[in-house]
Amino acid sequence: MPPRPSLRSFLSLARGKLSASPSQRELPLTFVVGNESADLDSLCSAVIFAYLRTTANAQAQKVHIPISNLSRDDLRLRSEMTAVLAYVGLKPQDLLTLDDLPNGEAAPGSGDTTWYLVDHNSPTGIIKERYGGRIAGCIDHHADENYVPEDGNPRVIETCGSCVSLIVECCRDAWDSLASEARESKDAAEADRGMALMALGVIFSDTVNLKAKEKVTPRDVDAVEYLEKKLGGTDYDREKYCDEIEKVRRDLDGLSFRDIFRKDYKEWVENGLKLGTCSVIQNIEYLLARAGSGDVLMKELGRWAEEKSLDLVSIMTLATHDDGKYERQVLLWGLNEKAAKASREFERVSGDELELQAFEGGSLDLDAHGQWRKAWKQGNLKHSRKQIAPMIRDAMNGVGS
Picture 1 (spheres, rainbow, N blue to C red):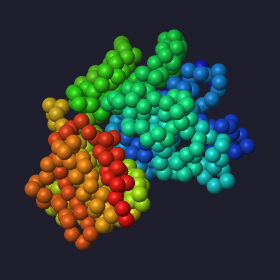
Picture 2: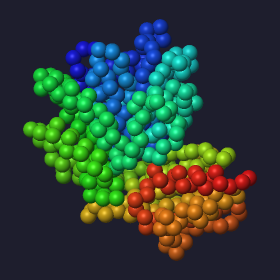
Picture 3: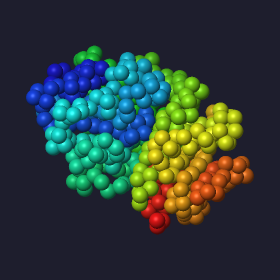
């Protein structure tokens, strides 16, 4: 490896390793990939972990290739990522996506790859289909799905507000070992500044500038303290940075409903049922105002469910107010009789824990023609999709045909 590269040079190097002809590849190819929602945490965690793993062990000359777990076209929906990248001198086109994975005869065989998961611990989609048996480790803050081998290295699954806080904690020694080079090299110094800004952008976005006390953990606070020290002597302004990211993140006005639903989307299959969850950064009232009526909004959601061949579809909202307080809402729609049973079971088993209260007197509810739908205000704000999706999946597994 040459002297420590800038982030842009590192991403270019990773792209070159991935696009090399099969006969010229250095095998196995080593990848780092975030989860399928490809939110800010997943995207930044993959880049930071890949960079530090590559450069802290430069003698091994093993480039870790960060993959954004989405198509290149979907990058345009990640406006908050575009804003963070601009701060560090990068553009969305610098990132590698699923579209950059070679296909056909050029695709690397499963045995020719090694994969590390960040911000999830069980692969999905094309990664699971092609390379599910090649998972070497993970760093994540979701519920353990017992997919990554116990001897995974690393295998870190701990609670915190942002996965990137765990990345910082796990890679701190490696990052510190590179500090002297940052004092001597402009590229290394820019890379450190860029990674610090990326990580801070994630943590502030996930925890509302550390004001969302239900989400903040000591790990997040420690990570912020460590990262801000790396920005000493720069023109970094925390409040200005937070405000800009939050403003961009909450702006959905230019997106269609389809884009809103797929902007932060995850799906699972359990017991023959397919669940799709759409996390939305505005509340249901905002969506209703955009649609003009509940019927129009549900028609749009139904179209999305049909496009994705879903049995159950859910909207989970998180609306943040200027004082840092926030509210959550959940909508769950079972689109056939078995899915309706699972939806009712979710309400029966988890309703009290989540402190679910009917949304606007049940104005969006449905119980007819083999379908069942309810929308709720969520009183227990501690639980996000990380906790609610497993509850729905448990309900799906608990119903018969």
